[in-house]
Length: 156
Picture (cartoon, rainbow, N blue to C red):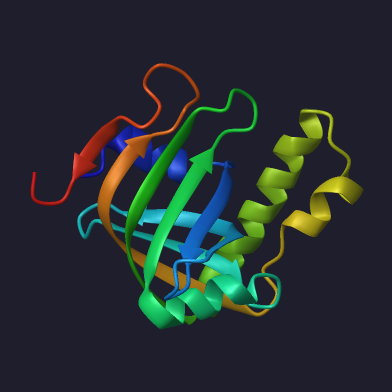
């Protein structure tokens, strides 16, 4: 299911944009604060701040539908996963993983010329929740001719 290179990509210091919608299909976005892959189970787990992204949390509780785009800020290589999510409070180990991701992504963005003052409002793991996403499909989202190309779908 997951190719090793995509799993590595998801776990690297990439931007993590979480897309959800409420039951009336009104969209909401949030940002992830660290993600990792269980290749054998086909699950992506990620931490999100319930304090910073309450609409995202509400939508996940309502219907569990989610699309997450992972994008490398240096060249915009991007992949999107879609699936159904289960939400729960993050445990101490998951919070620690999230904290390491936050240090890595801030460092990555600062090397690209952004100041910490600009970056810090985007990223938080305050009131951390864990999203466990059962992946149903993976898409290329890198801008260009292959954007939107499906790489994998459950059942195909």
